[in-house]
Structure formats: C-alpha cells, structure tokens
Length: 524
Image (tube, rainbow, N blue to C red; front, side, top):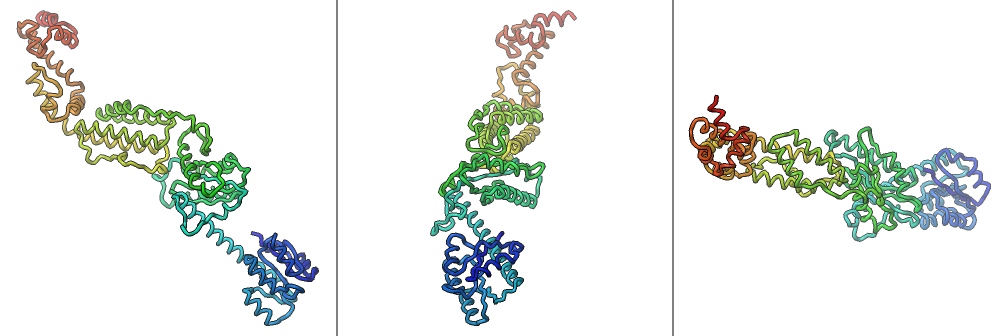
C-alpha cells in the first residue's frame, strides 16, 4: 500500500529538496504535492486527501501549528509531522496538546525522517487493515441479516461502504461443491475446513484481481455467498469468465456457481441472495454449464415431466417380495435414469421419493410386514438439499431405504414360510374338492390375502389357483386309472362343477383329454 504525503514549507527550495533528494519510493511513500503555506495546504487537501502532512512550524500567515489544528478538525485521517528550526519547548508542548507526537528539529536528519515516515506508514497500513477487516466483518453480518430479512441493529441504518458508490452495479454469486454428500463421507472435518478456506480465498482472489470489490460468507457448510461490486459496464458473462478458472479445487472436487441479475440498491440484496441460491439448484442438470445465469435458456427448456409412480411401485414391490436384489438394483438404476433424462431437480426427486416410499410402506403393512426397525430415511419432511445436492446422493438415499425394506421383508418371510407350507398343504388336501379360494385360506391362517399370495408364491413358486388345479388334476388322474367312475363324476369329485372346464384344464396339464388319458393308462 502506497502512503501519500504532502510537503508544506514557505521556502519552495526546501519543499523541492525534501521531495527530490529523498528516495521516498523505497519506503512505499509517494509525495503527491507541495504547498507553501497553511492556507494552500488546506486547499490542496480539499481535492486531494493525503495520509501524511510534513510541515514546517514557522511559516508566514498560517503557521505549522495552526495548520495542524485545522487538519485535526477537518482532515483527522491525515497524520502530521512537524519540523521546527527552534528547540522551543512551547512549540513541542503545543504540538503534544494537538496530539502530534512526530516532531523533528532542523537541520533534519534524513535517516531519522525516513524512519519516522516509514513507521507512520506502517501504522496507517495496519490501521487500514484493521478497519478493512472490521468493515468486512460488519458487511458479512449485514449480509447474513439481510438474508434473514433483519438488520444488525434496529436503531441504525447501516449500508456497507462498498455499496455507497452510485456508479456501481452489484451481484450476488452463490457457489457450492458438487456431490457434497459423497465428499463428506470420505473426508475428515479438518479436511473440509481446509477446502472451505481455499474455496473462499480462490473466489475472492479471482474477483478482486479483476478490480472488483467483494465480501463473502458461508451461509451453510456447502454454500458460499459473495456480494460483488463492479462497474455498470460489467455483465454476468464477464463474471463467468472470472469464475471459470476457480471452479476446480482439486482433481476430484468441483464447484458449481450461480450469478444473480445485477441490482443497484441495498434494498434488493435479500431478493438477489434468494435468486442466486435458487439458480444454484439447476447446477445438477448435466446439460448446463457449471455456472448458471438467470437467463440460461436450458433452465426454461428442461422437461418438467416426472415418471409415473405407479409403474415404479409395481416393479419395486415385485423385486422386494421376490427377494431379487439384482432386479431391485436394476429398478433403482432405471428410476434414476428417468430422473436424469427428465431434467429433474433434487427437490423434485426428493418429493417423488417421499410419495413412493409412503405407497410402498402401505403395501408392506397391507401384507402384514412389521415395520419396526425400518430405516425410513424419507419419513422426514425436509432434507438438507445443499448436502444431498447430486443425483448420486439421492440414489444412495433411495438405495439405503429400499435395502432396509428388502431386509425387513426377507426377515419377515423367512420365519413364516416353513409353517405355512405344511398348513396350506394340509388344508388344500382336505378341501380340494370344494370351492375354496385364496382369501379363505388367508383368513384361516389369520393373514391378509395379499400377504398370503406373496408368501405362497415365494414358497411354492406358483400362484394359489395354479397349485390347486395341479392337486385336483393329480387326484383326477388317480381316479381315472383306478376306478370305473364316469369322467363327469370324477370331475365333480375333484372340485370341478363344469365338465367342459374340467376337460380343458386336464388337457392343459397333461396334454390329453381325460378319456384319452384313461385309455393310455389301461393300454399299458
């Protein structure tokens, strides 16, 4: 940082000598002007503020002490160095009363003068740094307050200094790490803090090196918001070019960014923050660039069609109750592929999954499955979409949910299949010649028809009606080969009231009619 200095002396040759014979640039000082009395010095400062005023104390008109007094009142940010040709205690005392500790005697020792100016410069730099940090921190708090639609102090009407320039435009930029849930799974908290620090530094450095003012703050562990101040001539595409070089934090860690429309009033800050955050949701769409604008055409052209839940429900129930983990994984892959192709946002996927899981839960309860101990990730009404901000994260949640269901069904069915098989066999063997239905057997077993159907098919590998027909046909075959009863009598005795229907079923299972079967058996 360069320190600006004004030299004041009523002898021009001394002013020029101090200005030209001392290598001020070596200590970071620029002499921006000379004045030959106090009045001229004050006039100069009206249009060109400086950090340090080096003035002689003994001048005609307004002397150095009077000038120092005026400076303290009108330009308190300027530090004053008094140079006196007299070792008068009264001069020094008046200087001290004015708060001026920097007092030199003529002839001036150049090294002493340069050391004093350098020290003052370092103090000014440190003060500015501290003031800058305080202003940045105050601006951060103000921004966070604006995001929550409140002010820092209700008794003050604070506006950040960076937003007091009327010739500027403002933007809100939002950045987040892609696939954050996966990264947090494989990284430590210390590593995450390190990357967040690098992330903020990279964004701020890129913007400031392009001549822009910016203040950033983390509104969430995976959301950095940056207020940017720049000239009216700057566009979102210019900001895109600036940010494009900082979106890759490491080989496997990328940032997504969004840029609000430009605004021109601090009153618009909340709406612009929300706009940037909302735009960031579109970063999940693979067809879009990693930096999203408000006027991004692809946002408005994306398909809003969500796949039909009823199709998923049917396929998932089949995979779950058949205990087919390969089919279950395939169904999940197909579901996620449909979401990708439809350009669905993470929030839309979350809502669809909530509805789907509710439907599946009802089917499980209707089947008599006890849901105690069930993972139930999607029971919550909300999810942190800044953490689970990728298709992969949503797929992991759905997979965990369905695998929990799969395990629950498997444990429930395993213990019931053994006792069910023997009891069902006994029941059918005793009543196969009557008009029995699956719902009747389910009621006898004290389970729901739906659950009975699932258990039965899992154990016997076929439906109830098919199994009952097999039992009846086997009984009919025995009677056709072992008795002289007429075919219609045998049909009725094994449970078929209609003769033609019996013959049709018999031929389906044996390949021949009942009469042909009897002849074949008796001919052998």
